[in-house]
Image 1 (cartoon, one colour):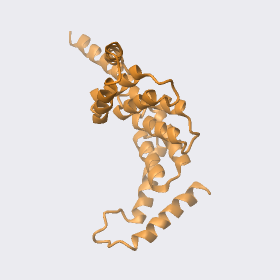
Image 2 (cartoon, one colour; image 1 turned 120 degrees about the vertical axis):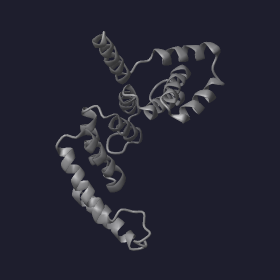
Image 3 (cartoon, rainbow, N blue to C red; image 1 turned 45 degrees about the vertical axis):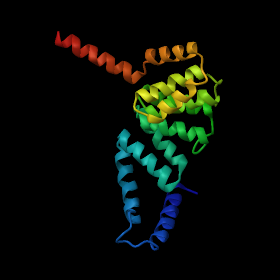
Image 4 (tube, rainbow, N blue to C red; image 1 turned 90 degrees about the vertical axis):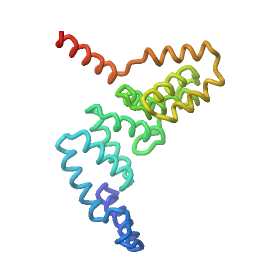
Length: 203
């Protein structure tokens, strides 16, 4: 079924459901507004806005349930280094929606997101190493990534890191902590270079 037909079929279903809801109390956006939002977002996305490309992909993934079209727009945003687009491609690769299910490909997308400081992607990488999904089980690597996720504000990273610590030797923990301290993603490295440049200009 063509993308446009899928979109309108999904919208028709939502429209039918909306008749069961009291409009004065409904928290949902009217169905014609959804179509308008997609059209407006697509116009901006086609002009090259990475944020609009990402948002359009999100609408296709969550509202229209057209995962192939979602992946197409996420890829466009990813070319422009959009970290959330990297992360959505990681998740869709993980479950095989819109592209083949492939843990190693999912891990590649998550690493790209992590390079830009994406805490949830860091956490996801930790789960891959803890469970051996697409990579050998490695508690040191898992601890490192949970630690990085925690350092970037992802609370679940703290819990998983602390739980994993209980089954690790002191040497393994020390190695994981060293790796976390030494890790520099592209985002962090570019920020560090910018700080150094600003310092040199100030002198």
